[in-house]
Image (cartoon, rainbow, N blue to C red):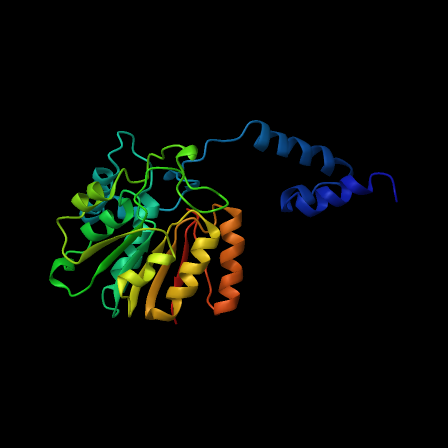
Length: 269
């Protein structure tokens, strides 16, 4: 291998057009200094949003809309947290999915509700909800304890999680302003039959346990109507859930759109 081959090849492939116009003998040191400038002394990037695992320069015009401001505030009320969790983009995507499903026949279903953060925002953003015939079915154990990675059960030894529900009564009170909301307590997928689900317009999955999510989606996918949307909360944030859902997507022949928040969006075609 000729002497200096690596540097010449590397700097030629990644240097950029201005460096490539320089004599070959000086490309490598200039390339090195260019990288030192960018990676050792990076410039401040004017991100418009930097939270929830993502940073972007995109224009978040939705954040100032009155409907979003109200919905996000309602999410904060449900969370009872003093500190803003920075879930604006995640809430925005849930609102978009739900809005597009209002004209699709079927129920709204959430598997893994916790305190009800996402669906509080969603329902607040749907002014016609209380005059519609739709149901919102919320499935959860409504337990405050963390999930055991092997069994998928809420166990006291895993501690209390701040975003999980303290009890089912508190969550029911949170949703009392909306009609058609039904809370179904217990472990999934065992409790799915209690919902008497025939058709689904919108499905939100946030169980934090890959095997349970796979079984729930496998059971509910046939009930989703064409044009309905499934939102996967942790799809691209947890490797186990990502791999499991990708395999299920192949089995059931659907495509998942990966978003920068780690959510996955699926439209039933």
